Image (cartoon, rainbow over all chains, first blue to last red; front, side, top):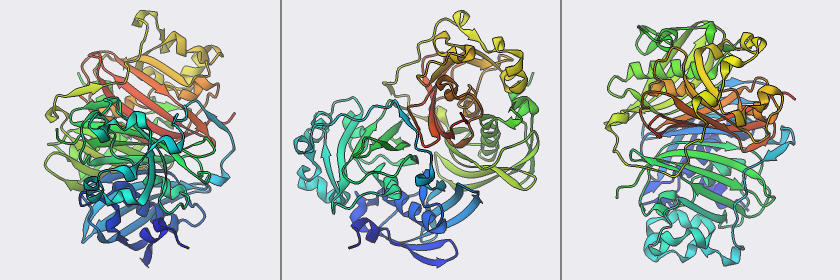
Length: 268
Length: 268
């Protein structure tokens, strides 16, 4: 059976390098379409144009205008294709307006050398059953954010005070993560996972929409099946903007994706 | 008097949004032109196309082929210009071949709110006179890397063991930094500073050229005059690649630029 992710990101090739997509309303937050979902759709279109290089190594997206549910067009243009990597420019538009523009380098993660030397520390999370499920969010929140229904998220109780009106102020949110239908996340899906948790500004007592200016994801390995650990942090809130660093670790304890975005601070 | 940086990055507008540049041989390492210098030239071209939005907020560059000293063409295309920010696509090419392709969002750093709430910790460096000047590098190194003559760098003695064949293995290099002619670095110049130090892999005992696949710089404030502190770290060396995170702090103790690049590990 097709996963919900595959269904919601299915593409129809219309002409060379151009694809029709349908942005599902199930991925909205406050009416706007989630940026990670959009990046996943763009990422899938790039993968379809590069059959021998199926995996994103690095994708950078600039968000130009808010997307709405409904039809969209993704156009891709190969800038350079070498032996092991290819770089592609891509755009997602609606009704002639560009929503996001992106650059991406793809390759084959399975063909990379096996060396791993990670000094980053895997997030420490209590056992899944001791974490706070996203499904416990108030009815009101879930109505505003249908995207929450896409995931099974179990938040670290130490980082979820914001849900009870008591944000820690540290700028840190982390959770266990998987798709609600239990399907595993593939490398293109990691582009979405890096923008799936609530903005880290929730933990700073600044809830609300944090519009992304730019998001770059580095995919470092094919994730092992099973639960992922996802961590968001910010360390520099200044000038009405903040950076959000996301790490995704797989069930084998490997750091499979690293991302950073620059976003606008929600209004106080 | 014009600074060396201004001279080496001077542009001649040839037609709408297109500029001629001359890549100076003084910015090479092992024959190739430094990626930060290239990004600075691209960044300057973008600034010239956006007079009311002079400062980079975010710039992402994908490196497609190695540049050589000599003439180059930078072409820019405004994708969206709003009230406070504009997003531009840019390419730098030589003899019809694209060297780097970039996306950039520009604005006016001076017009941003004054809030600063940084939990990142400013690098701790010994006083400048107790640090190791780049000019102490062996004659051989300096012949391979003319770029070193552009800067006055004073390396933290605790992070410079690699220069004596004893890398720390921590994946960390930090230094005091200024231009050799004493001119202050402006926001566009920060794009270059984020790729100016030796690759952090030197500190892992892997000297040599580390080709950049992707480099994103977030410029967070106009740097105060004077010495900068520059720090490079990596935490995930895997699959023959590594990420390099750079922070630039100004003399007022402000985190003025944050960057991350994905690069290829030098051959062992």
